[in-house]
Image (spheres, one colour):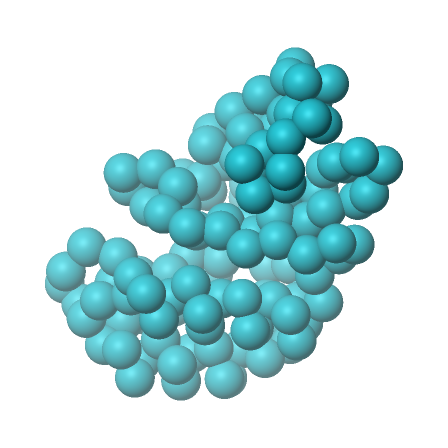
Length: 126
């Protein structure tokens, strides 16, 4: 899931992996992710945590954002090479996403404390 926020006047997009234990890892870019930067960030993060089925962190569930499908074959091949599985949520079903409560909490925290977070380096703020 991608979260867009502002830090010191710059738009930052945060891509995070959310597991059953909470946020596992994240990457960010100034501006927005595109299909190529999404694939690069995902494979980098998944390389660190993806495990073979049926171990924890063996299934990746994505929503139907366009950039999730652009390089779907490459992403699926990468995940399957790790023994994992890739699934997509049904269209227009954010309520089914187990990550939504975590991302909503992150966004609400950023809105509430954004003024204070501006003083931190971006890595520390996120």
